[in-house]
Length: 414
Ligand code: AMP
Ligand code: GLY
Image (cartoon, rainbow, N blue to C red; front, top):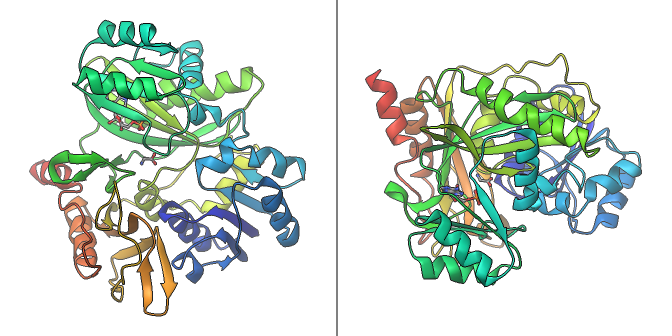
């Protein structure tokens, strides 16, 4: 099978790692890719937001399967044009990607499907905004309705800050604050059947003890030894299956990866958000644990053939720790030289924003790479990940030291 993967981040590096490990894959291409993915795939230059350019590349390579990594091309309708050109593509159509592209659309689908989520109001002017803020009270949760590259959500006790953010959005969703542990659980959908993956947890704040600004994600781990034993089944029956059924009933079936961000509250699980693609950095812990061949699985999803599929997982745990550039997330310093990457048997290094230069590998973005460690339990997996990341030098860079720490301590205590 010839596979074309679209994207260039740490998530795509992990997907390339999984695709390459599937013996059905004879050729792997990636556009635009990065220096890490280059070890696994043939790279092609591409403006992924130019739908015609994506179709042109696909026509040139004639892949049996195309996998779209990031949300922006999905929301831009790339899957619609690829499917009309006859390509088998893993990823939702433009209409279905609105589950991520519009917070209010996601709320409407959840309401119609009876899926538990925070109560919310869609507001368009200051009067409505203030009414909604005062209705729910602090902490205020204010969400830009549209795609905002991870900067759309503000959670704050400061009413002025909440109001300021709300007024800066064209349309804004204001919702009730959900109290409880957050988890990420992904389903792979063929439009009718959705197969749930194992849960993961990511760490959104920049610094240890969940302090500092929000980021794209500073680390993740899986599985979650502390979560209820039937969590996968609960999320499947309460969230994933009803959403897929609702999208099909609306005539816009969701084919691709449905990412549910959930809060486990005292009143049961509730959806915080949907994404229409694999999460980053959760993918960097899930793919190394997945035994089911990835290309075969995504091909079955893209060809409406998931009815008989059950996923198989390694019993091992995985922990990934992100190396962030100095100044990330507000103003990351780019172009720093990265020391030789260590080769340790229990780790995989996934590049997120690196580039080749005359002096060797350099950083090209805020989240530079992540090191995934695997082990019999979270403690072993953490030790591996931290052994790996501590051997990488990049001036001014930093990483969190507490990824999966509480969970590993709790696991040992059991
Ligand atoms: P999002 O960009 O939608 O993932 O939101 C970013 C983060 O904001 C989430 O990971 C949560 O930590 C937080 N958040 C979003 N919605 C809520 C909510 N209703 N209650 C509490 N926290 C929330
Ligand atoms: N891990 C958060 C995201 O992928 O949006």
